[in-house]
Length: 293
Picture 1 (tube, rainbow, N blue to C red):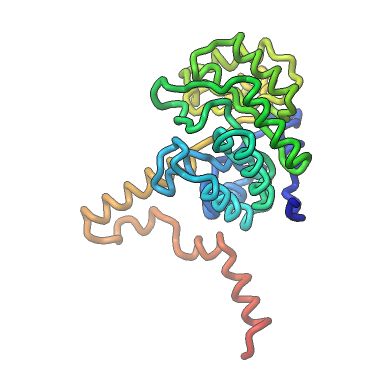
Picture 2 (spheres, rainbow, N blue to C red):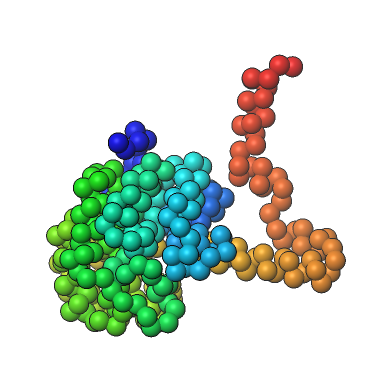
């Protein structure tokens, strides 16, 4: 039985199908998720790379699915916007995928993205070993998740044809197969420094499903290019984690060199900002209400 918790999948569906270009911001823990929601993002991307990195693991299925689900649960606990989870390959075959999907619904996720690689996967930007799954086997994963979770979970099929070097024809064949298997949206991935592969796909796509992209490598492309290509959603896939790494390295290096924190106090968040972000005022008010004088 699925939990009765309502993850508001309709909110994610509406976001993906909106006439306006939508943006999902990466979150890897409760704090980064809270910051993204406060900034005004309408949806979150629970990044596999970022969650693994915070655990000290590489993005090659070194983090277990239970650790990913746990991280998603913490994000859901402190936010009210829909969460699309990077589910890698589903952590195995159809059975693993449907178990993970069911647990993600219980944790509060609104959607899961499954990539069409074999398990264990490697991050798409590392090396050239990116074997793709058999189309029918992967479609079985999608169907198993849809049959298990129904409308409680948006299912995004992540297309890795360009990453694997298989070209546009393979990408289109796979995308049409995934749509027929029940995918609610298609994520097309590329590691080129320009959006040419993405735009070539969009030019041939029948728009039967919304298209999602992750422009990490072609980050300088103006977003108007994506609008004109009828792309539904852009995922900023790892920028909170990368920003945190950069800031922490800078602070640690300065403190060890200067043997003082005096020089960096004005450049980092105040303790008061942390209290405000995590709503310490509510706790203070609750103490006045519930604790005896």
